Length: 141
Image (cartoon, rainbow, N blue to C red; front, side):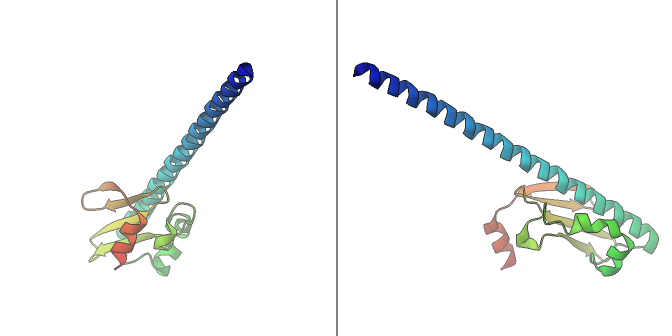
């Protein structure tokens, strides 16, 4: 009887070790996926920046919005501006553009990795900040 209890204890210990190992693997996979999303979000911001800078050289100023006229000039940008895979559905799955009289701009994208990516053209710098649904709801009110 004691031997059966010892074998049962060993079996439970081995099963627990297996579960912990599996949980760690799943956690690593989720972390890698989030890192991949971050890379895609940064790439999207970079590609939009390139198009905005090219547009300023052509037209003399930055567009006030990522409107149809701008998107028609740069047809490949759709996959970066409106991308349901990388941008949060809580902000319409898109990147937002704010311009200051066509002279400078701020690009903001809420990535599905849980970070908000903001590029400021004056400072020529990309900022990253964690956000939550609570933050987004607070920004909208």
